[in-house]
Structure formats: C-alpha cells, structure tokens
Amino acid sequence: MLNRLETEKRNPKSKHLDEMPVYEVLQKMNEEDQYVTEAVRKVLPAITPLVEAVTKSLRTQGRLIYVGAGTSGRLGLLDAVECRPTFGVPSSTVIGQMAGGEAAFTEAKEGAEDSREAGELDLINLSLTANDVVVGLAASGRTPYVVGALQYARSRGAVTGSVACNRSAVISAHADHPIEVNTGAEVLTGSTRLKAGTAQKLVLNMISTVSMVGTGKVYENLMVDVRPTNEKLYKRSHRIIMEATGADEETAVAAFEEAGQHVKTAIVMILADVSEKDARQMLAQSDGFIKKAVRGGD
Image (cartoon, rainbow, N blue to C red; front, top):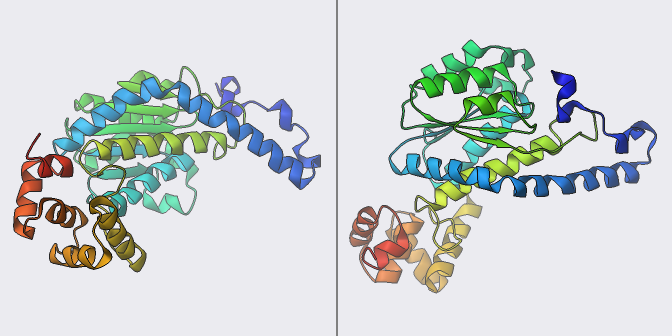
C-alpha cells in the first residue's frame, strides 16, 4: 500500500536534491510549502463539523483527545500541552496520546505504532466516555495504533475525527469527521515531518483554538483565560486587561491582583464596575463568556 500513498511518492521537482546548492534547496522547500495552506483551505468544510463537535463536548465537560504516532503523535501532544497556559484549561481537558507513551516524544519508538490493541488500551486507561472527542492523527492515514484507538472510541459512543495527508485514508473509515489534507510528495521522499507535518499542525491549531473560542476562552481576539506562569505572561495579562477595557496600567494591575490574578474576572470587574465576587458570579452565570456577563445574558 505504501507505494500508492501520495506522501510516499518521489517528488520530481527535488529529484536532484543532493546536488543542489543550499539556497536552491531552501527555495524548493519554500515553494513546496506554499501548497500546504491551499490544501488546508480546501478541507475547511470538513474541519468545521469536527470543531463544532469538540466545542459541544468541551461545553459539557468532555475532553479532546488526540491519538497518533511518530511526528503526528508529537504534534498532537504539543497542541494539547500548549492549550494549558494559553486557555487556562487543566491538563485533563485536552490530551495528547501517542504510541509508546510520552517518552516517545523525545526518543523515536516507531514500532509502537503497529499495534491496534495498544491504541485501544491507551484509551481504556484514559477512561474514555461517550462525552469525549477522539481525533486520530496519521499522515499516511493507515497507522494501526490510530485505527485501534478510533475503533474503540466508536464502540464507546465517543465522537471521532481524523486527520490524514492522503486521500481515501484507512483512518477516515473509522471517523465521524474525517479530514484528508492532500499535501502530495515531500521534497525529501517519505519525510512526512515536512509538508504533511505542517498541514497537521495548521489543522490542530484550528481545532483547539476555534473550539476554545466557542467555550468563552476568548474575548474579542484576546486570550482572556491565559495562565500567568512567568514574567512574560504576567505582563501579557496586564496588557490584555488594558486592551479589553481601555483602562490604564495602574487600574489594570490593581484589578488583576484583586481578582486573584485571573484576567477574565479583572476585565468584568472593570467593564461592569463590580466587585471581584460579583464579577465571578456574573461569569459563572454566563458560562464564562465576558460579553454575555457584562450584557446581562443578552
């Protein structure tokens, strides 16, 4: 089957890669990368219902679980980890599960992807429920580990999605919402960490970011649930409050501290001119959406 996959074919434009000057190789890679965003644009209609399903799940305390192997698994784990500081969600809300476990993130364990049973077992260990969404990631679209995970997820009634970089992918048949981004042959034959990896990263950016927007984690285009875990993020928190409210720095910092360093609460305190306690209550009653809290549920 491998010789039929677009991601495994030789790219005639880079056949003499080993003879090209450095600049020419860079130019060729850059030219090929231009195709990735267009390939993703073509599948936006397929991405939309998956994002809607993830949003619905997160609103009802469900989880988004990425499963993959190799580069695909690492990209899923990376997206999951970055949701924690960016959107202030616990590590149990967005999970990256990869073949071979987290240790495989830093040391390749490529053989771990060949077991369907391992994919199923990893989801069993996560106590998967019908309220969760499982997204299988595989550039080839045929990874047994991912197939096993998706099969088990469906058997538990969970919504399933998939992201592959080949048409008619095997994993698509096991997903309620299959996404196939046709990125074509790589500059370096079969190295799917290149265009295919870029495409998967773009799709994951969309899935996590847009679903978080749909759960009140964003006000206008500001990350109002950012978790200030270092000096840079403290300063960013202050700027976010200032941008959202028009307040000066002194007012923003004072509200931030009074709100227990919770950006969203500080914003509501200033916009609605209410106490910290009232701001938290207003947010709770509006499902965490700032505009709804300030407008009284409109």
